[in-house]
Image 1: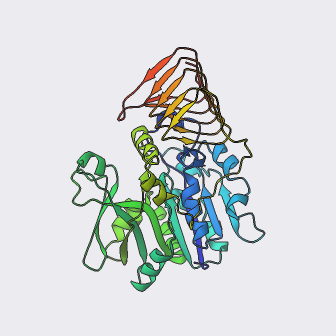
Image 2: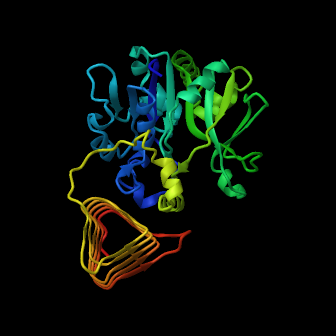
Image 3: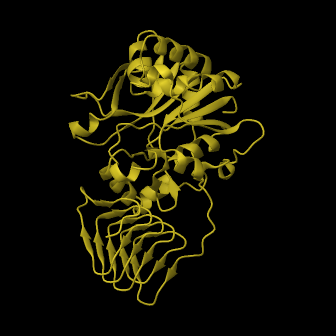
Length: 373
């Protein structure tokens, strides 16, 4: 995929992650003990041979920029091509209306036009997967597709859950025959991964035409309105996929990583997931520490009990504290005799002595960044 560039769109206006995205983009939300959500799609692109990647930011992008930096960890700190981070670009005519994905693409037309690659892979943030994109590209080329939409089959019978995504139908050859965005009554469980392959020249034309007609959403307007005129195909991805758009999905998909089989699907040694390197000392376990079935990152100090939980870098669990079925983000502290169950603590949270926080698997307790309980 040497003749392909990548675009990552970080605008997620419809997410329901609440305090987790109060001061950061969805792409910058911590995941899996030491990663950020954007690490996964960025690593997919790099492992697939893409060396020209543009990241289009929206609001609250400081955390994301700090994490990506020069792109060194992804081997994208290059003199030619590499990583390009685009701050929000608010055009005068769009100040009074919500910008969509087409607006985001239109704002970086200068980047498209100076890039020499023929093809482009576009991804929205909020998706966690780990794959080489070569097979999808081969599928795109062999079917002579104008646009290829990657999708997976969401294993759920809940209409409400399917109705929050773009659901598509294909014919026997894989050509997309319908694309319903947030359908009230979805007809299939084939859900778009918000990951697309197309020619750069075609994308430029579509974006220009849609913006000129006042359209702003890539799936609803650029794709759905052109089903009859363009060869739009669906490529089924059968690997592990996590959509992070609610507190519930974040908690559920994070806790799935405690399953060794699912963990192995996401973290394939042949397709490493890169992230910002932080030199931390190894985790320290005190004499009374009791840790079972948990992910523990570097720099943690554990003197209490941790079970079925995920601890990010620098977390401190004091003596006689109990943490069960919980996610504790970087540098948070749980003091003596405290009890946490089905809880998400954002960065730098302090739980004082003897406090008890109890949520449910479907409704975990979420404490925002820097909170003191």
